[in-house]
Length: 284
Image (cartoon, rainbow, N blue to C red; front, top):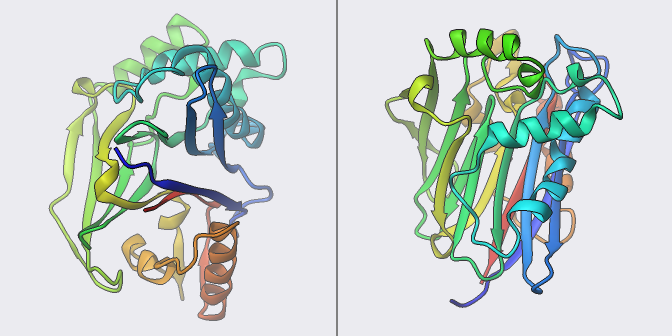
């Protein structure tokens, strides 16, 4: 397989309704002992109702680096990512550093490596995913976990976990889907998908063929928190204003996000929740 150059970047910022930012986004390149380079884009959104989740969201993201070094390197990316094991690992690692209650945070990530022909996306918690394809058939998905993602704090005790499962298994993950035009300026909404949590692993996973993908962008649910003159804005509409990204050199998401948010503010459109994005752009 001909290797593609992968451009990684991320950005996060505080929302209007918050006193401090509880989102965090980061990208990593990890060189394993075999000389294989892994690329990871990830973000986490800390729950506003829990203490110090700005710390928890960072720990959720940074934990991936050591987790993959221990478990996945020298392998193909695995679509069967066991988020429950990862959540337990992060919770156990946190105990010597801070209160595990801070780990009330989501996790969205994309992972691949130089030799793989696949990109794997994992979503555990509310957020959104945009997939731009080389054939111009782009797709935008939003994820609503019904306030029941598997936060690591639920693994603190068997009682907490059992209470979580009793609520979780009676509800559904709702995925809204939009098809976008090749120029990103128009879209059509498809029928939403409803997946019973009882039949779903702890994280929703999607396998993409790297040769078909032009770029991948993960968003926190801050993309769904924009409003203008008191009216909620469709997150797909915000994507038409955020994309396309015209250059992918350097901190392309930092530049684009700052310009996008400045433009939205000028138009009287504000995000109440924290906003974060992490991405991969594939260059032939």
